[in-house]
Image 1 (cartoon, one colour):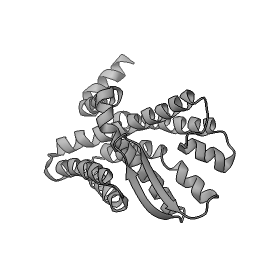
Image 2 (cartoon, one colour):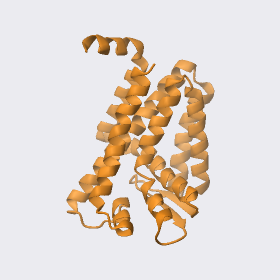
Image 3 (cartoon, rainbow, N blue to C red):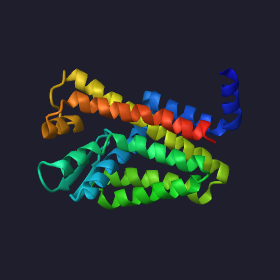
Image 4 (cartoon, helix red, strand yellow):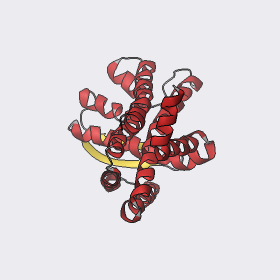
Length: 230
């Protein structure tokens, strides 16, 4: 076991450092307050993408200074399309993290950064408030700077850190969802799980558990891709 850990550290020091930095950014309340909007962008982007894939009309996305967000779509008020739309939010950061990790592990960090820019550009088109525009543009500027001017080693480290941040951030977002439900003792607060409960008659706690399982499974999956598979 010790030899395996030593081998992993020796083989992937940059990936491990990126994981540590991302974990600190998520755990430390001060940094999380400033960086959580990145997770919110991924979350609302997940709603938007699933809405479009489900055949719904996309009206707009709003991002707020308190790190909350809102995606509005048009279409049937019930049915699988709306269920999928509400399902798409919380898993999105974790799934993006796993997908990005696969590209980083395949030495395609630069491609991963350009895909991230394309997704941010698609999100920006649908943002409908000033704060949201500023948040998406600032995030895109940071990614673009590394994609255009960063050396390969810098691109690898930044891309890995972004993947880990989405993975850990996805976990913390679900944890915050569950803590919010405990504070309200399960009463409806308009969250995604409450909307899913209304649409499907499946208890909100079960939906929260599904989100937790997806976010929890994504971290070791990405870790295996980044640290073991190579």
